[in-house]
Length: 101
Image (cartoon, rainbow, N blue to C red):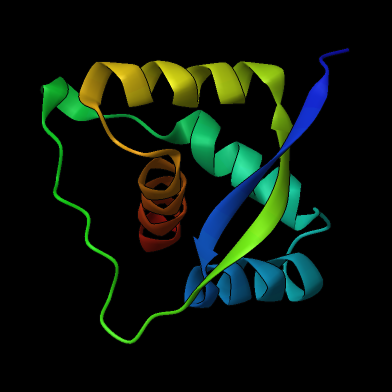
């Protein structure tokens, strides 16, 4: 079984609220497991990065996020490869997954 690790990451409140709603009303999965799935499915297609800017008037809250070690490794690799912060990568992964649902 794979090890899960915690890190503090800022998550946009509207995205977190939407994940919380899904966790409580639609799926039997914790918010951490939903974020883990978002990261697992996240891809940067053809090395094209869509510029991600925090929405105006959006607040971010630092949260302790628990993901599988392999997902943190994936994020660290993307961070180094594309020079994008973990904050942006995680929020992009959540946003793009929620838009596709």
